[in-house]
Figure 1 (cartoon, one colour):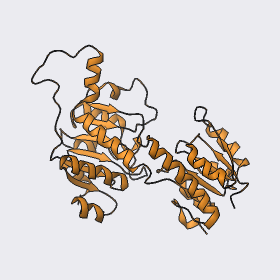
Figure 2: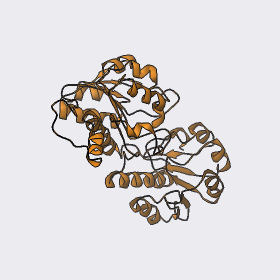
Figure 3: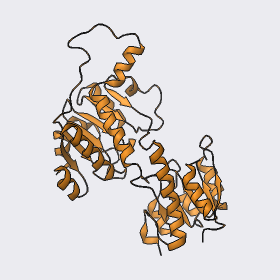
Figure 4: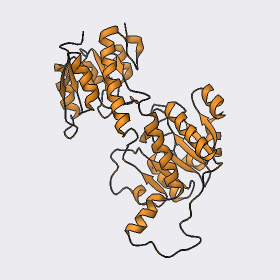
Length: 328
């Protein structure tokens, strides 16, 4: 039973999920997002609780887990989980929940929007107006590129990548290619998407959109060697994790015109420094990691994070478990 269980909530997540937990009799202590835990604070404070409801901004490493191996469950308010030492949690028998699919629409919208913004230099055009540089009509100035009939390459065609591909095919009749751990039968059937190797993805994509998990194989995969294999007129879009691309190499690729432009909702590190040169390049659009930032998406994330905990105590299972082998 969840009644009387003490839950440490590391941020002030939407109330709909927290109310579900309260209605089950759990006792919640909610930390304000304006004053987040430091690593050491969370390490020592979590020992007083039975359950942890955290965000992907908290570092849940082996040291944390070994000092808090009493935790009955950890549910994360995020789809990704590269902040958690999965092996350590599994060894200690701590089940981990997360919230995939809640942000499919919202995050794919950001990728789609960044693609359009970069293709037509939206951010730079706005800056020109703000700097009183609108100027007169010049037939060959301020030229972007059209997306109709172009090739979209998806790196990591999961649920979010599929939604991005669906939007691009419907809006622009784009040809879809992708690179994945395995082939996606649904993408083939519904989008006529072609499974290709990584080098082919790089060389054939007019727009390359990243939707993969961050792991040892994907970390800094998009380096200078990858960008050199891309088309000079191609666009690079990353709404997954900032460490999937090597930021210094991306800057070089843009400066040397290995690629035309980039749209980023994720950076390395986060937050990005206000003087980062990428922010001042005319062919780059950067957003502050707002992929899931809609009322609907964030509420669904809160509901799923809560339901993971509730279902675990009711049935021993979870709606979405990262390490199901520990479930009894």
